[in-house]
Figure 1 (cartoon, rainbow, N blue to C red):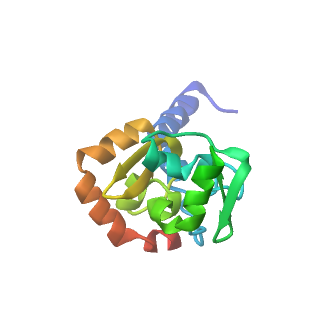
Figure 2: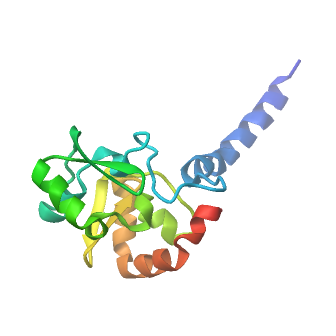
Length: 159
């Protein structure tokens, strides 16, 4: 039976460990991660959002489950057939950097899931981030983060 002091000491230990536990969930530090992030909707890239709309409209638009295109074993959804056709004609133009993993995470040597609405289009590339607050951090040093992300990709998949 634990006394109050033991409970207090263990509680303090749990609170101190919380940031590490949180980082573990964010980092997804498992070996052999897939090259394309499909963790939000199984088998679907970019969380089901329209990749072409990021470029054409500078907006995050949900794709329609009935309007899809497959590329490298991943299904992508589009808001319109016209956007699907643009993607199908040149998928490499629209695919997110770093396989659709969080760009800030990759720049810092790990992988993390994304919020499809936390995006940036820069230098003709789509970068997705874990959250809008992480995107704000990404933007503060965007050029340096892109350079670090490019250097880390795809080696971070092995971590």
